[in-house]
Every structure is written in C-alpha cells, then in structure tokens.
Length: 175
Image (cartoon, rainbow, N blue to C red):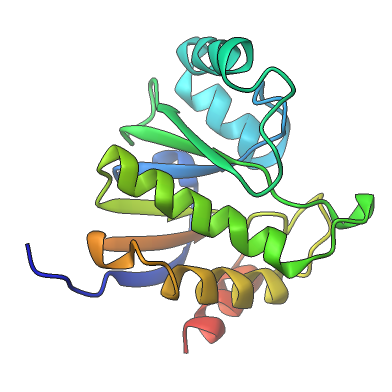
C-alpha cells in the first residue's frame, strides 16, 4: 500500500461519540476511570472497559500505566473499535517537560499502528485538570502527530476538543 498523508483536523465535539477506529483516553495512571474525558469514556464504554483495564493492571501494569506511554483496549459500547489509554503529564505535580506530553501522542499513534487503526481521535491531553496551557498542548500535539513515523498508515487524525477556544488553538497549530 502506498504511503499517504493522513487528514488532520480539529473539531469541537464529544470524543465518546466519534465514529473512528480508535479514540484516545486521557487516562489516569490507574487505568480505572476518573473525571473529565477519562470518566466520560468509561461511562460510555460500559463495565467491559473497566474489566479490561483491571486485567491490564493485574498483568502488564501492576503499578499503573506510566506517564507518556499508551495501551489499547476494546471500546465496549462506544462507536469506536478501540480505546487507546495514555497518561498525560501533570503540570501541578511538576511534570513540565514537553517531551513527556509529546510522548503521549507518539505512543498513542504507535499503539494505533500496532492494532491496525486507520482513524484516531485525540482529546487535548493534559489541558484540563493537569494544568497545561491548551495552546501549548495544541502545538506539541500537532508537532508530535506530524512527526510520527506512523502518520502514513492513517487516513484520519481528528482532535476532538470540548471547547471552541481550545479548538481554535488546535486549528491555529495546524496552520
């Protein structure tokens, strides 16, 4: 198959309703749900997602998923096929290295490639309660996605943002 550039876009929306192969969850390290995007994804997916996450904790990640890494599960009742969980850096906890944030997007695309996803939807990882400026998240996210060696394997990368202000930051970063 010939390499091509994925379509990259930013929209205001609800990531839990995205009809894509994989949605990315801005997860807590515990993988057991939380607030914001993480809680919405767990609620929408239903109990099967929590069961898969508990199994990941039991087997592969007994101490939790490390910041900047990613792992996929099924998507339960969501319209997506998979959920890719990644843990963003928390500025309030002193995790201020942009490379840690970029790693969330890079690792998520590596995981998307591993599972065969052709379309991926991302939230603004770490831009909410983790204290990162949405404009900084947008610039880092877009650069990481554009620089990914897996971009040519995808048809669509969609940033699905909760607010129009954050979406405008992503649109600006996309140029």
